[in-house]
Amino acid sequence: MRIEVKISNSLCQIVEGLPGELIVEKSGPLTVGQLAADLNIPPVLIVLAFVDGVKCPLDFRLTKNAEINLIGPIAGG
Image 1 (cartoon, rainbow, N blue to C red):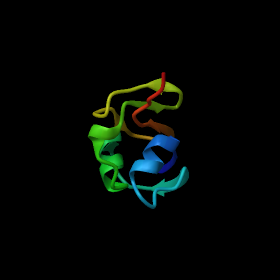
Image 2: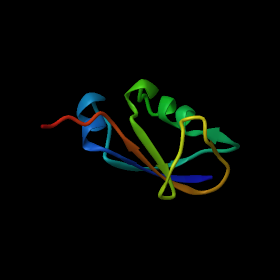
Image 3: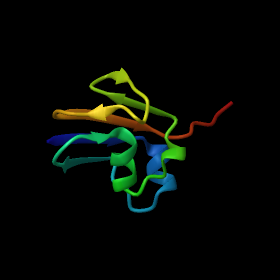
Image 4: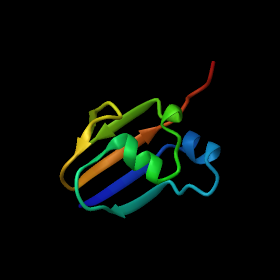
């Protein structure tokens, strides 16, 4: 399956060498958390995950081509 992954700037700043966007080819079912781990993103750093525009938990199982958005910690004030 082809997965388009978009990663927030906050995660890119925390995880060295992580691109903002990438295409991943995987076979078989996979969860959002497993995908993050495969990309060396500690799941604890993921505040929000969206699959095809819908908010999903990290244990959401990917079974088809998808667009994933991973959002890291946000600070401000």
